[in-house]
Amino acid sequence: MWLLHVDMDQFIAAVEILRRPELRGRPVVVGGEGDPTKPRQVVATASYEARAFGVHSGMPIRMAYRKCPDAVFLPSDPAAYDAASAEVMAALRSFGLPVEVWGWDEAFVGARVEDPEALAKALQEAVFARTGLSCAIGIGDNKHTAKVAARFGKPGGIYRLTTQTWMAEMGHRPVGELWGVGPKTVRKLTDIGIATVTDLAEAGPGPLMETFGPRMGSWLPHLARGGGDTGLHTEPWVARSRSKETTYAADLEGRAEIEERLRELARALGAEVVEAGRRVTHVAVKVRFRSFRTPTRVMKLRGGPTADVSEIERAAVLVLDKFDLNRPVRLLGVRADLEMVSDPAP
View: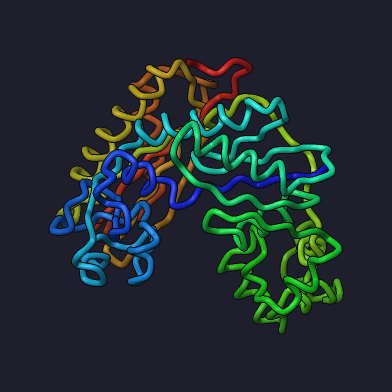
């Protein structure tokens, strides 16, 4: 069976440009309130034209403005992205093939076909006809090869990568180009002399096991050789968590002020969870200090899953006790891990 990874092109920016066709071809930056003069907002996404100036997601919007002052800055509109994503997934499902959704802008499609490129082209055309949005599609014999292939296809192209062609395409590349290998893992691999995909694929088990433990130490070389999962989970996508965070214009100082703001976030998050008909199993709190150190702490609700907003708020305050709050705080976040349900709330 072929696996096709559908990856929407500059999805959030593309949705905004659809609503404002006059912005096509211009650098567009989406994030926060869309006001580059306001402090402590970050970029959610940038159009390809803005990326050419070095703008990228996670960057402070003020920095994005310095890099590209002629960009159009827009506020985030999650409801619009939800709606557009639903239409994309409906277009993919119209083919009657198994579809596994990965958030707003990604999905895997499985098919037993002689010509996967022809199917990929048909999928692209169906998505564009229904939504006006373009996508790249990677074709592989597992999720990993398909995911990496989609990168080579961006924007708007189709690319095939299999375990047979993997080493020729990927062997010379840095290990950070493997799906799921982040900066921390790259640093640890570098420390034991592993820099490229070939290095990792041929690495002996000793240093890897010592550095990463038996599970990850055996998984990493498998990944470097092009291995990956082939199963598809086609159940309707249901959020496993909800979160809410705020970066404050002025640093918060002192337990009382920090707790007050945290309670506000927890109550707002709790109200969203209740409205969605979900129950909370764990509550996590994220604190970003002035130094940008950003620890997260979490606790399981002792009384079991709940939809009681006051219980969610109480748990957030208890988690806050796990932090040393003797330093100014620039950001607070609350995450609610949700009880999984067989039938998602509409």
